[in-house]
Each structure stands twice: as structure tokens, then as C-alpha cells.
Length: 253
Image 1 (cartoon, one colour):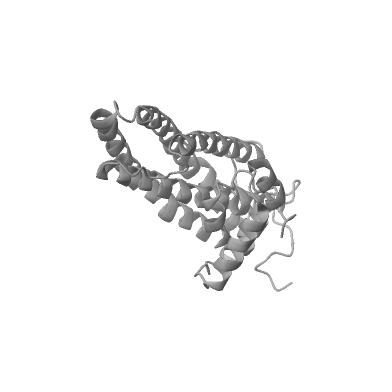
Image 2 (cartoon, one colour):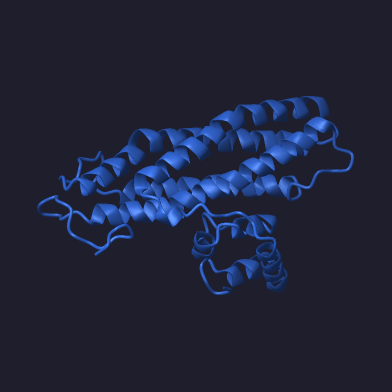
């Protein structure tokens, strides 16, 4: 386990994400990093993390999404209807709470003004990012999946290959992750101060929940959807544009 990439650990056992969140271990944008490397870089005793993992396993958490069995179209629908919809519903609520906390308690807690600025910046990027995915990238991936299923030619795309937009999406994921790392640091790892007002408690807990959901959201795209979409595009013959016969997770070949 220590030397395996974080993304592979979470893909195999999704409940591990909850343990990694507790320690601020990034399994979505830095999924290629091993648990050992991540703990060393952050100064975390890996033995404590491993003990928490064993405790988590002993509690028998429900984590049976079976995402590895989903086809590309269902995976996209899950991302849009679960994560994108959650973002759009939650962002205005948290922004409104942050504005109120900054106005009413900014003198006592001046760092909240910076948290508000960073959250506004990050969520603006997220909203633009989701729009690009839903209008351009996701429909193309769906059309690829449909063409493969019905043995049709590879669909036309507004880019040479999917590699370019996927790389850009991953870069945007990383940029947003860096902003949330700053927010986490400003909020002391989302620790709620003893003298915090009810609205402040609510907004800190809300931002933490939003960040955790965002990590799972990005994990599904970076480590599951995008690699599968790239493999899907490569399954079409470059000369004829027709799908080639290749063994997939859903075939009996």
C-alpha cells in the first residue's frame, strides 16, 4: 500500500478518501504520488495514517459505488448530476455566508476577507470549467462511446485529439486545488474556533464539505473518466475512423 499511487488506492477502495481528507492528502490532482511520498512531503507519520485506515476498515463503511463498472456515459451523468449540480447549489449559499461573516466579523477575524476573495476566485473558475466540460468535452466523450457501441465512425471534434482539452482540464483542477490549499491553511485545517459565531461555524463546515466533494469530483475526472476517454478515442482506427476490436472491461472477449 505504501508505494502504490494514491489514485489507485482510492479507485480500489473509495472509503480511503475520507482518511486522506483528514490529513490533507491530495489523491485527486496528485494521484500519481504514493502514500509514503505524500506523508513524507507533508511531515505526517505514515504509521498513524495506516492505523486510521485499519480503523476505518474495521467500521465497515459503505463505499460500494462500483465506479469501475460504469460506462463512460453513466460516469459523466453521475459527475454532472451529483457533483456539478451540488456545486451550483452550494456556491451561492457559501458566498452569501462568507460576505456576511466578512462584513459583521471582519475586524475580529480579518483573514475571512482573504478567504472570501479566494473562494470567489476559485468558484468562478469552477463554474467556467464545468460549463466547458458540459458544452464541449463531455458531449464529445459521449459521442465517442456511442460510436464505439454502434460501430460508427469516430465523431468530429473541435480539437485535434482529446489530449489537449484533457490536459487543460487537469491544469484547471490543479489551479483550483492550490487555491483551496490556501483556504485550508487560512482556516487552520477547517478547525472551528471556540469563540466562533454560528454563521462562522456554518461557513467553515460548509467550505470543508465543499472541498471534500470537490476532491471526489476531480478524482472521478482525472483518474477515471479522462484516462478512459483517451483510451476510447485511441480505440478508433486512424485511417478508417472506425472502432477497432479491442478488449474492454465490459466485453467478454
